[in-house]
Amino acid sequence: MNIRKNIAISENGFIFNPLTGDSFSVNQTGVFVLQKLKDGESNENILKALQDEYDLDTYTAEKDFYDFLSMLKSYQLTENE
Image (tube, rainbow, N blue to C red; front, side):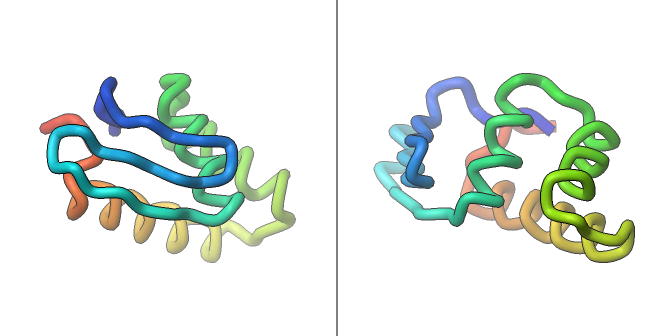
C-alpha cells in the first residue's frame, strides 16, 4: 500500500490531505508506520520492524498494522489499488 505523494506528515504525527482539506493526528507508532510506507517498505518488513521496535507478538503487530492500513484507506490517504 502506498501513501499518496501529496500527503504531508509531520514528525509530531500531524497529517494533512490537500486533496480533501482534512487533517488528522496519529501517535508515534502511526508516524513510524507512515514513514515506512512512504519509504516504500513492504508490509512484511514493516511488520517485522513493528515487532522489533515495540516488542510486539506477531498477532498483535498484524492486527494493529492492518487496522491502521484500513483507517488510512478510509480517510483517502492511500493510492488507489
